[in-house]
Each structure stands twice: as structure tokens, then as C-alpha cells.
Amino acid sequence: MIDRVTSIRAQAHVFAEDANTPLDEWQRALCDVERQPRWRFERAARNANGGRTAHIEGGRAERHAKGVGQRPSAEFLIVSNRVSSFDPTMPKTGGLAAALEPIVERSGALWLGSSGNLVDGPEHVADLERHGEGFVARVDLPETHYAGFYQGFANSMLWPAFHSLGEWMSPTTEADYQSYCQINVSMANVISQLEKRDAIWVHDYHFLPLGNELRRLNVEQPIGFFLHTPWPEPAIMERVPHANELMDMMLAYDLVGFQTSRDLDNFLACLREHLGLHSKSGAVISDRGLTRCLKFPIGIDHKLFAKYAIDALTEYKDNIVSTKQKLEGAKLAVGVDRLDYTKGIDNRIRAFDHLLTDKPRSISLLQIATPSRSNVPMYSKYQHDVDCAVDEVNRKHGGDDGWNPIHYQKDHLPQAQLAAFYRTADVAAITPLRDGMNLVAKEYVAAQDPDDPGVLVLSKFAGAAEDFSNEALLVDPASPKSISDAVLRASEMPAAERRERWTAMMNKLESYTIHDWAGDFIRELSISRQTIPADLFQHLGFGWLNEAQMPLGNTLRELYGAVKNVLDEYWVLPSTDGGAQSGDPAE
Image (cartoon, rainbow, N blue to C red):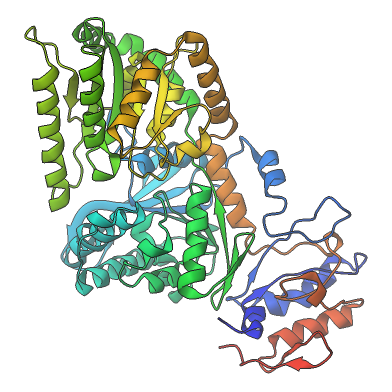
């Protein structure tokens, strides 16, 4: 554990006793502190009881309530491994791309990601492309390191580990890890050369060390990180090579966001068990300073998806009619996934085998499975296994008249066409083994006919289950029987119950959209280093973790003295009994 004096110098909390002191005098008194680039200033919120100091999350709900529906600041940079095509007729390459596209178009942010082109030499940035109010910049990355970064450490180790699927974790080499780090260095080099923006928002498991590399290059603006995948328990994380180093580097971020309470709790547990770092209301103090860890459950643009669904009734009328004719009176369930072993498609197919054995020709599954990472061996094997399972169920339960229980499409479909299938389906079978959120579940809800909605069957290990715990039919994704029982119940559910469940889910989608999610994150990031006028607070103190340890500053001279004490590397923290507690000078 770091000593308390280092903690004090790593993080400053600014509180003031004298509310009558002019603001410009407080600012002059604090100017020395503000010049220290490694110090982070956190805004503390007042409790309702007369302005007393609050926990770090205090006031977040109030700030969100004031900002719902507002755009986040345009002056921020988004970083992810890949960027969207921004073409509504083209399919999205994943939940991250689908989520960030409307944010960039509406906010005016710059989105930086890999172009997919690899170069024999240093990284290269293509010209900016404008999309709506925002911009996209694509980076050509070094071929030497990309395979080890992407196919190697990121997707053969981190991806299965973060989904708590230890049996899918493939041994990786030290070279793979070094390539993973080197691509993060390349992205940091690119970012440091771009025009400076107010804040940087990094996305997903590809870039755990990126904040650390940016700090090495003296990038000083607030940097936040959001993980779209789950975060595993400490026992799984222990099996990841260099896990402690990765978690320590993540603490270079000012703000780290997760999809669910479970993921947030797992991350804090990993810091506690593996690094010996404790948290208070999601705040962790390390020798890198303060890192705030919070939950931000990602939403969707429900209005856009509802519009897609209505327009699709005309645009994709022939597809809808053809699909219904193939059913021959059976109900329709839909599943939409990448062909990824985390999605549980194989167990879903087995579930329909169970269901059709008991209820022949009662329901069909339209399974849309987008091929993914086919050059990674474990993905190729999984795709083969799913193909064989589909063939077996169709052979076993299909009719001589050509009726098939599983309609299997390995296609990349645009979102508007997906919305047509969502609207048509009586049931959505969303059964991943683990998932950060799963936006398909929310898109299915948004696309429904309010008068005749379908039913959502959802894995209890998808992040969306935390939002829809009472409205969706939750299942164990590893149990085909659990899935088949829920699908049967959903297909026979009375209309009144379907409408009641759908209305409750739709209300939740409307209350926290994709724009609220982005605005909430950027607002929390923007206050990570913000100082507050003196009249908001009662006390002055630096780095103390509770009110009792904070010295009072009744005059400007006392304030100045406190500032100078903290800047003095040989100053020690007074103990509560009047003595002094020594500590090593700050590095």
C-alpha cells in the first residue's frame, strides 16, 4: 500500500471555510497547486444538510437529472479499435460501433480508430471525414505488431477472460503481450500529435494501457475509459499474464466506467485482492492519483430504432412476407449475434431441439449469425460446431414438405432490416454466456408494436438483465432446458402480460438513452479535476479521506500555508494525537 503522505500529494480535495473570501483570492492562493500537472482536482458535491461534504458520487444523480437529453461537449476525442461505417444501409460491426455512431454525429466529437490497413513502418493517420456534427480519423497501424495485439493477446486472452470463460483462454506469448502494449504506444503517439481536445474517452479491452502511455507523453487533459465487456472475478483475472501491471496502468485514467454493478464490484475486488488498493464509493487512490470507478449502463437511440421498425414494414415487406410463409403457422423467435463462443448460440440451438421434441412445429428460430474473427482458430471451430448443430436439428425436426425449424443466415444485415425481423418475431432469444450489455435486447424492445409486442428471453448473465430483471424472462444460458422452457412460456404468453412487460422495458429505454449515457460519462469525466468556489464548502484540506483529518483555514494566510505545506516534499502528516507521522518524500 502507498503511504498516506504519497496519497496526499497524489490527490487534492479542496474545501474552504471562509465563504466570504473573494474567488480571485482563492484562485491565486491555489495557483501553485494547479500548476502541478500530476495533481487531479475532484469536485465534491454537497449533501442536502447545509452544504456538508459528501461521498465522491454525491450529486451525480442531480447532475444527470439536469443534463438528461443534453449533448456532451463537442471538444472531446473518442478512441476505439474500430470505427463505424456511418452508412445506414451497411451492417454495424458490433455493439460498440452501433453505440458510438450517433454520439459522434450529434456531439461533434472526433472518433479515432483503426482503419484495418496495416503498414510496414510507423502508424499513419488518414484525412478526417465529417459525419454529422462530428469527425472520424482512421489510423493505419504497424503490421509488425497488429496480429499479436489483436488475434493474440486481446482476443485469445483478454476476451475470454473478461467473459469468465477460462476454458476458452488460449496460451499467449510474451511477444503477444509486448505487441499489445506496442499498439497502445502507437495510438498514444497519434493522439499526442492531434489538435488538443478538452478530454479523451477511450473504449474497450484493446486499450487498457492507453491512458498510461498518454501520461508518459505528458498528455494532461482528463482521460476516461469505458469497458464494453464484463469484468471478471479476481480468480479469473489472476490467470491473465501481466494482470497486475494492466490493472495498475488502468489507474492512469481519471474515470473508469463499467456496464453493470457486478462488473464494477469485480474490478474493485481485483484491485483490492491483487494490488492491495481499497476503494471508497468507487474512488481508488494510488500512486498515480485518484481514479473514480462508476457504472454507466449503455442505452440506445430508441426513437431511431422504432422508426426503423415502422419504415421496415414497407421497405422490407417482401422479406417479412417470405419469412411468415416459411413458418406455416408456427411462432417465430429471433436471435441476432456475432458468431462468437460467448454468445451461446450452440446452447440456443440445443434448446430448440428440446422444445421441438415436446412441441413439434410449434416455433421456428431465425438465427442471424455474423461471421467474426474467422482467422482465429477457436472461432473457426465454434462456427463449424454451430453449423453442424443447425444441420442436425433441421434434419431431426424438419418436414418432408421443406419446413425447417432453424432458419440460419450467416449474413451482415443493416440495422433497418434487423428491425423488420425484430418487429415480426414473437420472441427474442438473447442468451449469451456472458455479455457486457447486449444492445440487441434493447433494440428488440424498441422495435416492437406497442399493441402486440413480443417477449424478451434474456440470459441472466447479460448486462441488460440488470436493467430488465423483472420484465424479461431470465434464463441460465448454459442450460438448454432453461432456455426452451422460457421460449415456450414466451410464445404462449397472453397479450395483456406481454404489453405490461414491454411497457415497463420501454419506459426504461426512454429514461436513459445512448445520449444520456454519453453525456453522463463526459460530465463525470469533466469534473474529475475541477475546483469549486469557496462558498460551496466548509473546510480546506488536501488528500485527507475524512472530515476529521482536515485542518481548518480561517484566513487566506492559513490557506496559503496549507498549500505550501503540501507542496513541500519533506512535510509530514500531523497525527490525530498532535504528533507527526513521517512518510517518504513524493517521487
